[in-house]
Image (cartoon, rainbow, N blue to C red; front, side, top):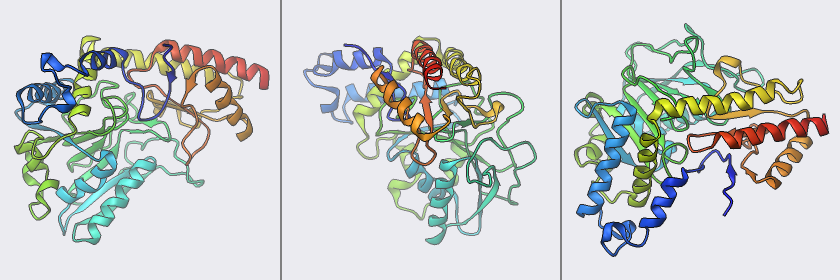
Length: 373
C-alpha cells in the first residue's frame, strides 16, 4: 500500500507506527481475546491504557500532576467554547477574547450564548481583523486591552483556517493581562515547545496532533478547577471529570487508546523538541517555495506569524487554485483545498506529516508555477 501524502486539516494524518500498533492489537488486546474497543472502561486492561495516556499528556505538555488536572472530554473545541464559560464565567464577571481568526470568533459567540442563560459578559480585548474581514497577523504587544477583574482571557494559539500562530519568535508573544489565560491549542499542541506555566487552561481537539476525532484534551490548574461554577449540570463541571479521572461516564475508549499510541510514538521520537525541529523544517520548505515563486504564489500572513502547522497561500486566480488542487490530488497529495471560508490553498503539516511530503509538494509547486505562470 502506498500512503497518501495527507495534508488534511483534521481529521489529519496519524503516525504510521501508531496505526500499525493498533492494527496488531485490534482483535486481541494484550492476550485478552478481545479488542480494546470491547473492554469495559472500568476494567484493569483499559484502565492501564487510560492512565498511561493521561500521564503522557501531562509529561509532554509539562503540567505537573500536583498542580494541574488533565482531562479527557468529548465534543472537540467547539464544545469547549461553551463548556469553558459555563464553568468559569459566572454572572457579574467578564471574559476577554483575543480574535485572530475564525476560531476565536466562534469561541466568543458561544460565550455570548452562555451569557444569555445567566452567565457573565464578554469583551473583545483585541482583534486583528482587517477591513476586508480577513486575518493576517497575531496581536502586537500593547494591543490587548483586558477588562478589570476579568474571569479569563481566551486566546487561540494557532488559527487553523488562516494559518496564523503565536509565539514562534520573541516578537509575537502570547498576550497577558493579569487574568487567567485560556488557550485553544487544538491545531498546534505538541507541535512546538511552549512553557505552559503562564497559562491556566489549555485545550485541544485530538484530531490534528494527538489522535483521531472523538476525544478532547483539557489541562487546567487545580485552582481553576476548584473555582468552577457548581450551578451547572454535574456532567459539564470540570471538577466532575477531574475527581473521576475522566471516567465519570463512558469515555471514548478507542480514541484514547490511539492517543496513547500517538503520544508514545512522539515520546520515542524525541518528544516535542524534536517534533518542533521537524515541523519548522517542513514549514520552511513550503514557505521558501511560496516566497521563491516570483509572486505566482502569495502568502497572506505576516512573516512573523506564519504558522508551522497550517501553511496557507493563494494563486493568481481561483481557476488556477482549482487546477492546482486537482493536479496535486492526481499526484497523491490530499487535502490541499483551503477552507471554504477563505479559499486558496492550505497544507496542514502536523507532527505525523513527513518532510518528504513537503519536499514533494514544494517540487510540485515549482513545476506548476513554471507551466502556468
